[in-house]
Image 1 (cartoon, rainbow, N blue to C red):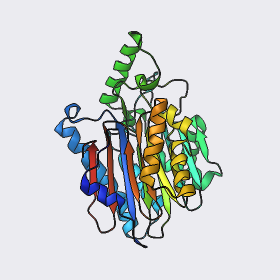
Image 2: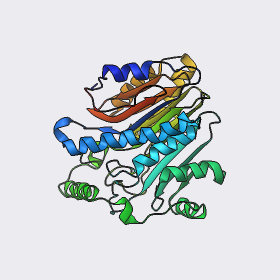
Image 3: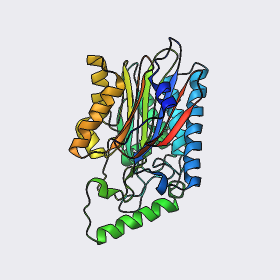
Image 4: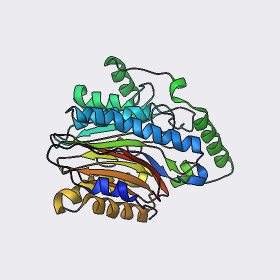
Length: 330
């Protein structure tokens, strides 16, 4: 395991919240995130974006807003930032398109909404929220989800909004790898071995939990592939006890039902969320699935767990300065 926490950050996430305290935890993806692979400019841009996402969600929680609104606000900031694989800056499919997935869940009611393979909604997490609140369904996909988005008046965006030069370069490297005969499964989907999915979990002043996750999937995905992020229980889950958002090798996280598995251990056995997250991550890695998760309990106990060299991550809590981190040794 590469995960080693900065002492101050560890103390911040491990301290249970008081009765009316709020907590917000976010991630921007896990993978081969190492100092020698990052320019100072990229490092700074990522950290600024994480702080902006924490600020957006924290502002809602500070004024007594809901955890559901807070996680949606935090994720929207990250969807709009091209440094992450969600919304603007999403990776390309093998055919050269951007197909976006997202999910949101209310721990208080277990209401949930999710979308997969959407192509024109600027903020997919807003569409997932609309599915939960206005459709009578839990999950919509593809053309139907795009049509529902338009019917709800959500902001639309063309392909030029989502596409970035960096992601096009990644697609070209992926295509070159295919021509060279490299395999098409596991980490070979992503030439940079990064899972830039974004997510947030929050506890509001009333003690209610919520989780949200958004992603562009993996470079070179085909045939309408869907990973764990929009699947309730796999990449996103919240109940009255625990909330989890995941980022990683989706095929394995689906098979392990990672987010629900962590919450079930917390709810049924009273296991600390960090211990539960580490245990499930270890089991997933044994299957071949690397990545990371963030978790939060109703008493404000938070967790980061990742079995990769780094994970973009951050935490904010009422009365404390927000903290962000990138590498495994901080």
